Length: 132
Image 1: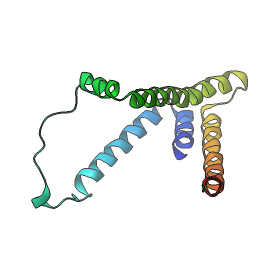
Image 2 (image 1 turned 60 degrees about the vertical axis):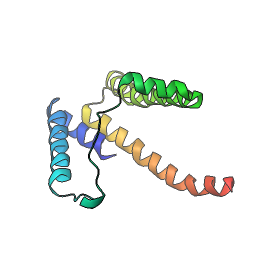
Image 3 (image 1 turned 90 degrees about the horizontal axis):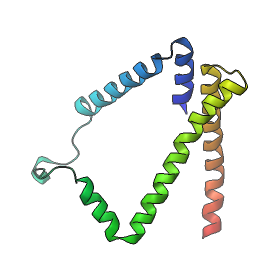
Image 4 (image 1 turned 90 degrees about the vertical axis):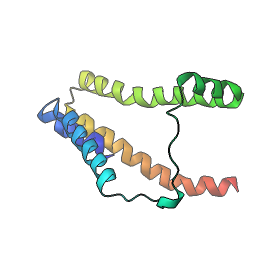
């Protein structure tokens, strides 16, 4: 929720600034994981890593081997596209239609995130009780 707000405020200053700040946060995150977080597995239980990442063809074979996985992957793909397309389209629409600037759009998207969190927290218990 803070990402769109920070990005909107920084984008109002300079359109490239949010990208530089995001890159800085990514670098800090990497350094924190590398230097601060301890390894959770004791040395005697660690195994040597064998092989690389699965190839694309191996991943596709795995999806085709289980029909339900292929459907689930397709639904996940469509859901991801919809999730990413909406904020992007909203930014363009709000700037064109209402004349909003970067800061206003970023704060609006952050407000939607806050409202989504409140609704999710408020309805989660009710849905869980209804499914019991």
